[in-house]
Image 1 (cartoon, helix red, strand yellow):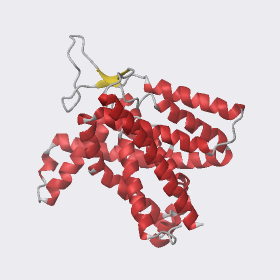
Image 2 (image 1 turned 120 degrees about the vertical axis):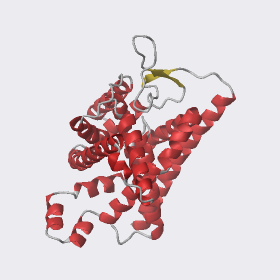
Image 3 (image 1 turned 180 degrees about the vertical axis):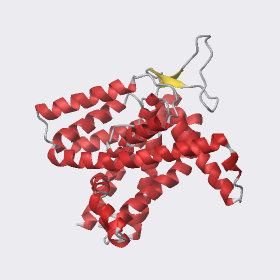
Amino acid sequence: MEATRTFKDRLFLVIKGLGMGAANKIPGVSGGVVAFVAGFYEEFIYSLQRVNKTAFKLLFNGRFNSFYHYINGRFLVLLFSGMIISYFSVSKILDYFLQNHELYVWSLFFGMIIGSIYYINKDFKDWNYKSITALAIGVTLGVGISFLDPAMENDNLIFVFVCGIISVSGMTLPGFSGSFVLILLGNYVLLLVDSVNALYDTFSEIITGDFSFVQNEARTRLLKVLGVFTLGSAVGLVTFSHVLSYVLKHYKSITTASIIGFIIGSLGVVWPWKKTIFKTQDDGNFLLDSRGEKITTNYERFLPELNSETYVAIGYVLIGVLVVLALERYGQRTKQTHV
């Protein structure tokens, strides 16, 4: 696989990693959808599946080159490089736009998910009572999850480890938003905002020769939380890849139908026209998180009025659909090039 990659392919793979990283951080959007639509989902699962007993045997025996090739290392390194860059760049840009142009961001993602449903369903022909049942279950679970109320923040390290395992499922299971699950578990701000910002600030200080963070209890706590969360994510990523590889091999039609259902169900989460509902205390004051910001409990969705803002939002929905169709076309051309 690696020998046939051109520089352009490698650059686009990093860009796809940027897309996956950004999607993983947005509640309601799944990084797995990006992989599915961009045409590298099966290679992604295959590569993760190669992190197994044989791979560790090669690693512990010092056969690093064999280990690297066995796990399709170049593919994983380029993809995860894009994801890491995204967490410290693209995701911050998205944070800005979500705060200042929330309607248009959700509209864009809504269009992308509609395009994803079209893309996945387009070539799926194996509709029967089993796949239709799987589709219905997927839709029901997706819709049901979107209406659950979030829990309170919890920095217990065992719970953080479990959060890592669960949240990373969005990378391997298209339509299942790991970041939205973190909101439900109460740890979205702690794990994807505060901890990431703490790591960014720490790197910035180390570069300038400032090591005072070791005396900062709040900072070291966040870094410890991020380390445990990352470990849980790595365990979950490899574990889910093995499970999904088996399921896709033996129950591909049912799995694909379930994925389509999950993505359809997630449309409720990313519906652009909604009002945020915040958690309040008994005295009526808003409950605040560790950053002093109001804690979101869910959204109140509504039908939009026909005005200029709505028309612009619909335009972004169409752009989102076109982005997915463009990715699909690129993915098909890439496959034809390598055949």
